[in-house]
Image (cartoon, rainbow, N blue to C red; front, side):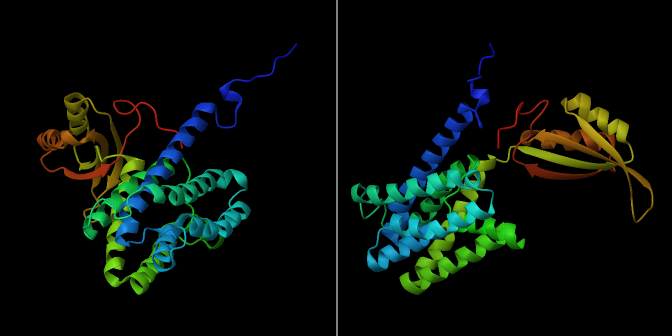
Length: 298
């Protein structure tokens, strides 16, 4: 008799992946909630997205921040459900939105109304850092806080508008509203928080910039490649190119190294070919031989 598989591999995502996403989104949402309540609300600094509208409305009328965010997110989540592929496309974002809406309106009762600092600039900076950490965890798990990020995705699918452009425009409107209703100093501090949050969330998603990539243009590809292969134990990929000014043949070598190896690479290359042209770029991670062995799941 054939037995039915009940292992984790038979699940749509696998129980480990599901648990990982659940933990990341829960932690990220609670961190984001603490950021808003400890830094944004006491200093009247509007965060990104519908949370910013919630903070503005709360400062003006005392309405619950979470309830305002939830009401604003409902039509956006419905559009995302209809236009982005059904329940699977919005399930994690819906969880984050609902959890945030509940948590922010409950925790605001227990957290100090004055926050942790009277310095508004410090509040803006740490609102960005802590909020970016929370958002980065949620993005890594495949979710979002809803609001402007989800709306940007919908407009990208429907009209081909770049997500970054839409996200910036929506948040500029929120910053403008903060300026009109809370004062232009609050608007400037909101911009500081948004910029810091973007950097912090990128760091959480991609990690520190720990690798460097090098493009080497040389007429001595074998000598340069051997110097890198045997001097640094790093792989080299090469292809042939042509100088468009001189019409002379050139070889282009591509190398990925760790950040501390940049000086050694330059020394080896220029010893092998003093006329070589070297371009150093930066990256966040490398997966494969000599680096991280396995890429994380999306």
